[in-house]
Length: 315
Image: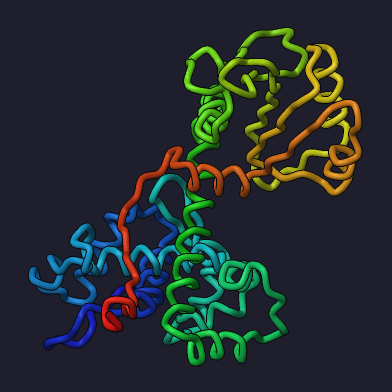
């Protein structure tokens, strides 16, 4: 049962200070929207109207809502809560277990005991058992530039996951159009609208779309689009079908794009093709390209890091 914190003046809680109360709130197994969680947390911490109205330096989001958003993200990455839909959350069995342990404080150090959160924090690093020393080192010894880079990496990692979930929710037809939009944004097909299209026909031999390689359309790239659950894998037989479909279309170039991932066997098969060129784009690569080419995303904030102009002072 939720209880209010001690009365009196207090600053807006840090994001990690919201984690435990959120987990307690969700312990009733109900599904809560992010808006509901923010409303409940404002009541738990007795936030004043002034505190609830405080904005981030960018002026685009309320500070306490932003911190609650990160608390939800971290709890989700650790597997203590799950997302049941866009901005809707529910506690997991693991979350119930943590609640039963009567943990007083949940923070990054505590969450590092969960593999999902470890992978989220350092996706490209091998973390020894325990992870505490590395976590402290990252926080304590990093430069301001390192802090910015790490924060950017965390935000990007979260955005990749959110993009994939949105794409999967939209379904196969939307996905087929999306991949053509992305390839056009990357410079394929030129500026003419008919240089990129979705076939959408039965009996298309497994080719979901085509796009011209350049503005004049001298060559054609065939597209295979698989909107599958990210936990699934695409194996060699699927690639063999696609290569066969390329031959049937008289094309020597193809791109296989999916929200899932490829097995090592599939990657090896694509690499060893000599009669045609096949490019594989898995879910994470797809989302990263969408971010890079501004497909389905928008710029929230721009930060400029400035340094001394030595030429000005020397002259």
